[in-house]
Image 1 (cartoon, rainbow, N blue to C red):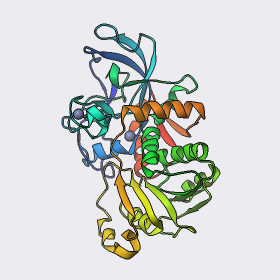
Image 2 (spheres, rainbow, N blue to C red):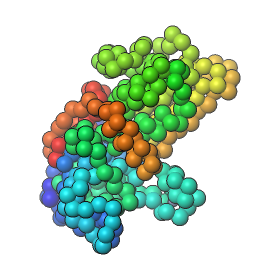
Image 3 (cartoon, protein in one colour):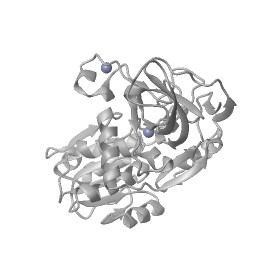
Image 4 (cartoon, protein in one colour):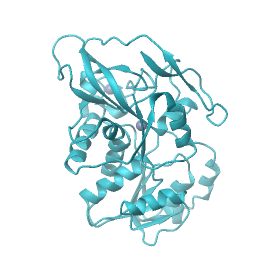
Length: 341
Ligand SMILES: [Zn+2]
Ligand SMILES: [Zn+2]
């Protein structure tokens, strides 16, 4: 099969084609696994973290991609939840131990032995991939392959982030950064909490315009003060300045949820601006988001189908995965980026 393969850790600014199109052996499904013919795979900022070494794959080469939609071609072993021809999705958590205190309480996202799709095992930037029946998700019919892909990570983690804010209807939510996840959160909030007000902080004028089109009541730059204090903020940026500025904009008792697998260290100095009375006092909270659980993905897909959420997508052919990644790196973003396989 053809696959876009990562062979080296490098900085995308110097090495603009870190993935190579290669002919590799077709994967073979193990016990309780299924073989998928991949139809589409979302491109995520986390792939930049893998390529640039902030969350490096433990072995190379590896096939990235953890928002894959495919049709089942083969089932390994006997029985299972799915049959040949079913359309399913694969998300970030490829497997977890199933025995630790986190796994036993539905928090496999925190399992220390979890394996990530497209980092620890081959992912969806390929014509075929395998997945465990226990970590595959039926894709609601209402979505095309392309539409479904970004729901599996950007959407599901946006859903988890929103749950973690504890937001209630009528409250004020801030979003710092407005990429794939942010735009899906905004669509979700408009449905779940129609009286909530959403304030969007983004560096790029285009992202701010896009946020207003989707119903943000106010948009500004990362270091602008919001016109009203916020009950919660979700940060989806790779840097620190928006974290400090979000804390300043939070109301007393407000919560900042940081949805980023790694922060780049380019502006770490900005943290020295933290001023306890301005940024933290009055019971402000900070909580990070780690991965997604199976329940998050299933609940979100169901909700997204009911609404239905139509993600804004930019489509690239599989062989142009490097261009999609560079567009994310250089912030040419409108909605989510998806590879058509
Ligand atoms: Zn992702
Ligand atoms: Zn576990």
